[in-house]
Length: 419
Image (cartoon, rainbow, N blue to C red; front, top):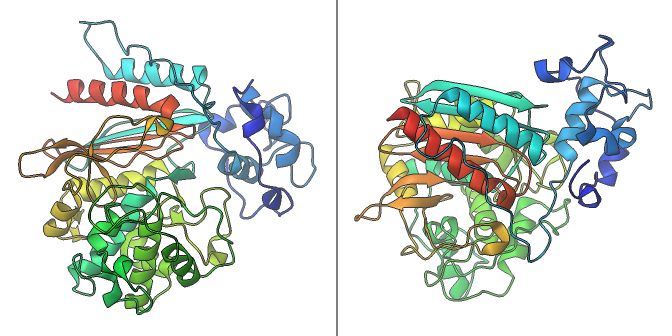
């Protein structure tokens, strides 16, 4: 049984919509199809999805096709930790003092997937641009597409930095340079401040905005909200600054944001199953007019690992320059004076640093970040260890407080194995 079944509700708009393109079962899912019918019957379906089986059976055939299962996994909402409740500590990966092997990491992830419980989990570890370990568990494989929440912020920041590299945008020009309606003190905020959550804007992630908005309308409405302080004074994690920055990228390029993302990041990196839409409900990609730039991403482990490969490679991806080394250095820098903090509700109570689109977990004397991560509220956890040229990606869909301690233990184990 699911831990908090009442919070895992399918969006009613999706329930009424037809399933889109047909998908195939991944190997873990295909193994459930005991009668080889090409669909999952109620008796074959794992317990974690049975409460939603009837709603997901869009054609009322009595069984879930691969496409119906794919849509179900994308639409399930992750459970929320009850107010005031903190998760128990994650168990040790191995007994203290014991040697660690990759098989221990895999066993730990298999146990985590079963015990939390999770629909699935995928882990990819890379060093020097090469995958050195990859495993998936539960109903996931490396190509299972899930919402990645705030791991989207890293994508948005990287996209904007491609325009900075070309001189079409400046990190330190006031946003009023690009938006004639960005007036008063709020208009003095810079792109650097917007992408590091120090622009004086609030914490809202804009989920309540109408989906019919254009990106311009979304940015205008976000800008109109009362500031929380003058630009450059305090860190306030949220989506407002990211959304306005995304619209500036659309405006100066003359291209729709989705087209810009596809042309500058997704296509060059081969991220065929990644896009930015709405975190609370998957939408047809062609109809998205209001991408939520701070939290609306959908991706797969195979795709997002390519993005991490580029970042850990200093902006180079398999011989193709995506971002300059200067852009990477600007992204991997603390702009908060180690004062960035989310709060206990998200499982990140300790003060940290923040760069452009990602947290700085280890900061050098020159304010450069040597360990950078952009974990999302649903538990997707990408990390780059700059000096080691190591990237670790854990793809799950839960609540970050329930996953975070497991992620730390997995990352520590990976570092031990790579020493």
